[in-house]
Length: 107
Image 1: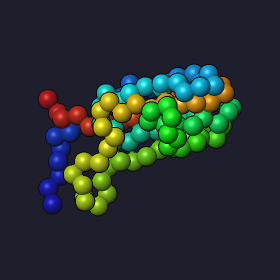
Image 2: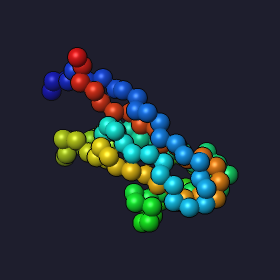
Image 3: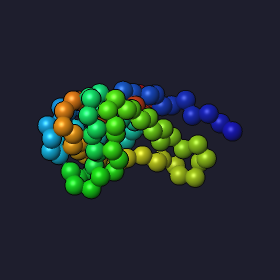
Image 4: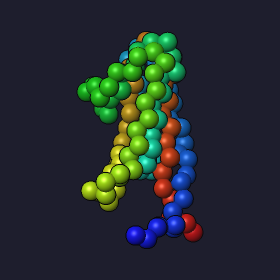
């Protein structure tokens, strides 16, 4: 098995927004994440959705979730959220942030 050494991990720009009690755009991805961290930094629950309407997940106060999207079994060559994916949050107060790491080809 050969090892691919032609790629580097890069840090994406953090997506963050203050919750105001209605659907608020947290941000949109400009790269395909390999690892993505959802972090409810506030004291109230926050729902996350891709469109401001359909709830994907509710994060209780202070909860964080890390998704490792790298393929462990090799069944898909690349499994990730597509560039342009938007995340909306809805919570009474606090800040919600999304941080991620993506792969960049070496120059």
